[in-house]
Image (cartoon, rainbow, N blue to C red; front, side, top):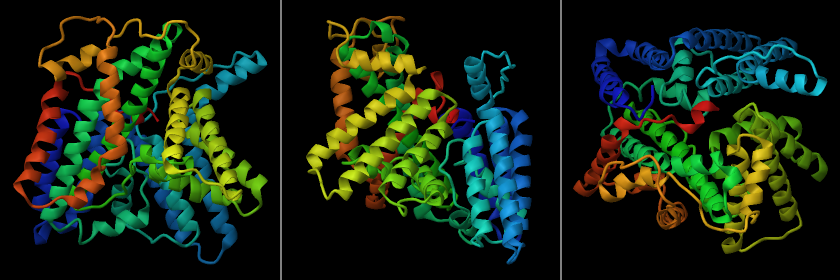
Amino acid sequence: MLFNTYTFVLLFLPVVLGLLALFRIEKLRWAIVPFLGLASLAFYAYWDIRYVPILLGSIVFNFAVGRALTGAGEDAGKRRALLIAGIALDLILLGYFKYVGFFVGNVNAVLGTSLPVFSTMLPLGISFFTFTQIEYLVDASRGKAERYSFTDYLLFVSFFPHLIAGPILRHDDVIPQFGDELRRWSDTAFATGCLFFAVGLFKKVMIADMLAPWADYAFANIAGLGTLSAWLGALSYTMQLYFDFSGYSDMAVGLAFMLNVRIPVNFDSPYKSASIVEFWRRWHITLSRFLREYLYFPLGGNRKGPTRTTVNLILTFLLGGLWHGAGWTFIAWGGWHGVLLALNHAWRRAGRTLPRFIGLPITFLAVVAGWVLFRAPSMAAALDYFAAMVGRHAYPWPEQSQALSAWLPVLTGFTKLGATWTPATIVQVPILAALLVFVLVLPNTQELAERMKARPLWAAFIVVAFIVPFLYMGGRVTHFLYYQF
């Protein structure tokens, strides 16, 4: 079930909130956690009920391993064996669904074999609920996890606001809230949740979805791109991905607030970063934390000298790229960021700095280049796209674009008049420029929430931010980009 659908907004969410209000009476409070756990499973089953047993099996297995770890006492050998077995089976499950086809295909290409390439549907959110539980197992092995009840653990993993596309939750941040906080109504929390959800919905429907045709057209027609059209396509995807993923994250935070639960903010205006180190402190914050604490630090972090630090950074981000998808473009994207981080750290060790007004555009352009790798269908296509960006063709103007068809209803109020449109540069350039100013200057959603007051103007802002995308979303519902990762 998608957040940006009438089914979710008009049926699932009101029913959950209404029943939650009923369960908050004294005699029924014990049922709140089991109810939300079942509601989260129903949310997941709506997409494809075949994958519910996979999710449930993963939850039961990791709960059992976590219980064994928390009960292992001082037996370090037993804890280590349990942890290795738990993580191994988690990664086998993830690898089977997400990577087996990629690896078998590459073995066939390298060795000339004809091994059967498995084709499996990717269960939604498998990367997120797998990493969430690996984090829990590691903490349990270190004595940093409580012996939670099964219903608490089930809700923690399957909690519907985060289940499909994050953020990656920490057990000690969330499960303690399943007590008094979840059982209590809060006007402030609900209003804050409405703000986050409305702004996130606006980002997704009115910005990300409107930019999608520009990005899709550019990356589907790489061979015919001129220089300007290549840059506009890359910038369109850069903005689409930002507003799509940050929009989802805002909605997830907002839904949790409505239930009086706080989950981590996953974005903090990442395009305002003046270095790649700062970027990764602001972009997909919970993934950055996971990679740092559960991969980079165990590899040695920066404790074993500059050379080892560089190797650890690059290896961490190569694996982080692979986490996003089974493809060489994702690995290359991870390697690109790993190299950039290593260079950034080397620059700092040398005692050098850049003024922010120089560091910001350099960082932004480096991120845009990375998104080309991330979006391109193959490495050859990515290299061809880069060639177009640096002037492979003599002509600089876009040749053809369907993108205006997405924005025309918003700009004029008219319906779509045809399937193909003439070049839309005159529309693309000012809109992308305005969005760039938006992400570089304006406050983000959490900053808006901090400023929000119980005033009619704020209520009107929330209503407008919700109603406008609500009216548009019915006819062209699209998936969130991070669903595929």
